[in-house]
Structure formats: structure tokens, C-alpha cells
Amino acid sequence: MVQSGQITFYTHIYSPYCQRVHIALEEVHADYRAVTLNVMQWPEWYNTKVNPTTRKIPAITYGGPADAPPEDPSPEAVKLTKSLVIVEFLADLFPEGKLRPSDPVQLASARLFVALFDAKVFEAFKNYFFMATAQASDLLAALEFIQARLPPTGFAVGEFSIADVAAAPFLARIVLLLEHDIGMYPVGDGKKTLEELRKPKFARLMKYIADLKARPSFQASYDEAQVLFIFQNNPTLKRT
Ligand SMILES: N[C@@H](CCC(=O)N[C@@H](CS)C(=O)NCC(=O)O)C(=O)O
Image (cartoon, rainbow, N blue to C red; front, side):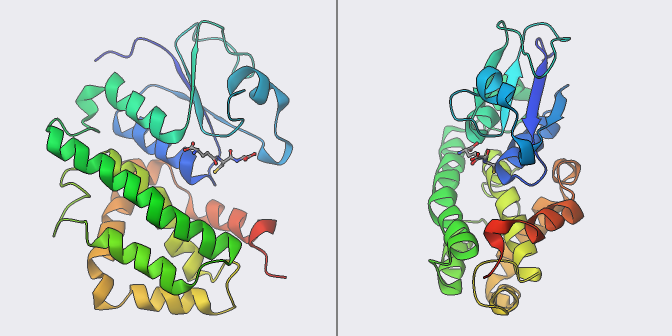
């Protein structure tokens, strides 16, 4: 399909939710303009003119004049937020990008994978790294649960799909945080947890993560050094 409207993508490199959208944009070869928000000084125009609904990133505007300034998008442009809504929108807009399996069973499996991933892995990610209300064993259990859903080879439902778009940013950040022992858990716990993940029991999951990270769309949307720097300086991840 020839893209019929402009796409402006509001983002920041640290955000796994933004990376979902970024991966999808790259996968479908969309023509888009990325606007990095100054998250240290959250711009008021973003809350009032781009995303008054949730005031979070990511968001996109679609359509309207291509030369409208990002901080003053045209009323003609559609404004969308919520990473998975945008990813599904891009899958619809660019069917040739094949982000969404054409087989209904595969599609349902991909959507189920996303729902389970968010319920299990995201919860453990938040609670283990940021809240210290979960143990390493909770994170490992969530990852084992997701690993058990993977086919022997390939991506979450075989071919690369929305399921992988949703999972990749979080899985990459989990490994990165563990490698650098960043999180609200006791010092040294991250490295021990990573040792567990490097055991044969988690070989399938680690191969899946390696395959995700090797994907050109992932590489185009990720800068490990920058993400690490932001995590290292994130006050909500500083142990007291
Ligand atoms: N469920 C939303 C979550 C988006 C989200 O939490 N974004 C964070 C960045 S990772 C944000 O904008 N935080 C700023 C804030 O809460 O003020 C999605 O899927 O897009």
C-alpha cells in the first residue's frame, strides 16, 4: 500500500512502549517523522494538543498536512495513543508488512501471547525492578511461563508478528538491567538472576531474545548505551 497520510511519532528512547511502536514503524517501512520528547521537562503542548487522553508516550498523529509543526498538529490529523493500539493500527494500514498473521488461529495466538506477556512478564518486570515487591523467583516464573508458549524455533507464533513487537522491548530491558544489577532488589541479585537465565533451562527464551535483538527493526529502534545511561540515572531505580 502507498501510505496516504503523514505519520508523526512522539517518542523517547528509554521507553519500551515507544519502542513497540518504533519497531512496528520500521517493520512496515512507514514513512514517518520521529519527535523525541524532552521527558525531563514534559511539554505542555503534548498534553493539550497531542495526547490529552493519557498524557503518556508513545502517541502518533496520522493524516492532515505533512508540514504541520509537531507541537501544533493539525485538527485534521488523527491522534492515537497506547502502544498496542498503534501497533495494530500500523498492521492494518500496512497489511503487506505482515505484522498480523492472516490465519485467525495464529492471530488469536499472537494476541493471547501479548495479553499473557503483559499480565505475567510486565507485572514481574515492574514489581521486581521498580517496586521491590516481587522476588527473582517471580520474574523467573513469569519468564518460564512465556518460554513454555514459544514454538521450538522462530518467533512467538512462528513468523515475526505483533506478539514479538510487544515482547521485544521488555525482554531486552530485563536482560540489560540484570546484566548491570540495576533495580530495587538487593545488590548482586540481578547478576544471580541472569545466571539462572543463562542455564540450559532458559536456552529457548534466550535464543528468542537473541533473535528479537538481531531483527533490523529492533536495531533501528534501540540504543543500548543510551538506554543503560537513562536507567543508571533513573531516580526510581536508585537503591537507598
Ligand atoms: N499502556 C501505555 C503505557 C505508556 C506509558 O506508560 N508510557 C510512559 C513511558 S514508558 C510515560 O509516558 N510516562 C510518563 C508519565 O507517566 O507521565 C502504552 O501501551 O502506551
